[in-house]
Image 1 (cartoon, helix red, strand yellow):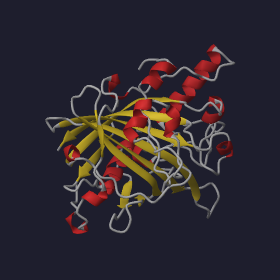
Image 2: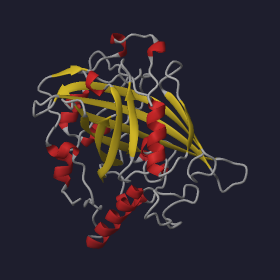
Image 3: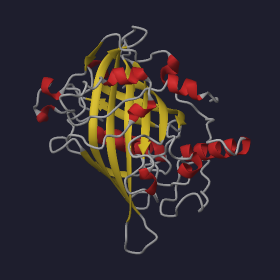
Length: 358
């Protein structure tokens, strides 16, 4: 971010990963404020809250149907297009928190069928945002008809929450490796908490998004200048890996990012107001960020694990589409805190989305 970016104190943020996000300052402020109010509390007051669609289009799937799958689409890869605050209580946060699970290996025959994504969203249980330990390589995400075309998506940071009961929040904020605390630790949201960022969403006639264009435009917009040299993503080879290279010296936090998609799921449901289809999808990622190091000749390498949960409402007129993005941050297995919280998220960020057709 180009403004209001004081340098963090070395006691709170490692010099190996020096540039922190705007959201980190909000998290740190909420923890310190709650500690002053009640030293024995676990910082349960939030500066922001998660409120997708302002509570109007909750996903209560009276009826729902699966989203289109790759099997229903032509497989001719040559057809692919080249596309250009106020404090609220925990009760209200949980009431309006959409959640989603993961694509897991097939359960035993004796196990009950896993509920669909829309049904899990309707349960409003934050533990359902858990990160799967085992999964199958996912197929490419397929988007519904009303999302196809070229869009400019504007993001507005709407809040965060700490769902973990196993890790004290002051201890969590002191961990600089949590996704979203540092710039570029979540590729699509390179500066979590920055308002006014945009990205390009180009969905071709078969319902497949240009991931490279989305990543490059979003990173540049979040950082505030052109920092991406190129994005290596070829869905013909695999849709589950992407590499982002940065202009040399453009950011201290990253010279290269490698992304690995560990799971995807999607579903189309009917909104609670009956006003049109709601598309929900989830993507679970592992990110490895390579950057400058304080040790000569040794590159810094930071691994982060997180998931994105999108909610998109059919615009009807096809011109302006509203949505919400939840990003669940998990503790990496190499982090000492992992044994306190293995699969459930420790922080969840929320962004409101407005997509305008271009």
